[in-house]
Image (spheres, rainbow, N blue to C red):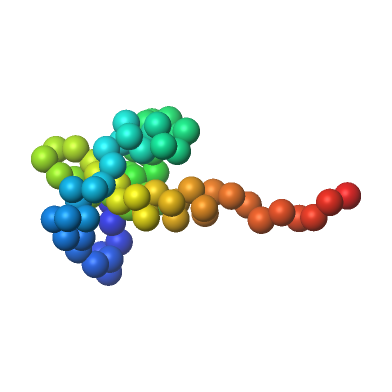
Length: 74
């Protein structure tokens, strides 16, 4: 799902977009987790030809948001 104020990707953007299995291989997160995060809006994705497509930049931002900042050493 994408935010309503997000710009519409171009055809070229979507040609380079990843399928969920490709995003799973790239990110190391399961397809079940990725699909759930798409459904809840945590991971922006676009439905193209019945399949979800994820822009590489959106996947990068999603993965960066999962990394919690370090609290320092003990």
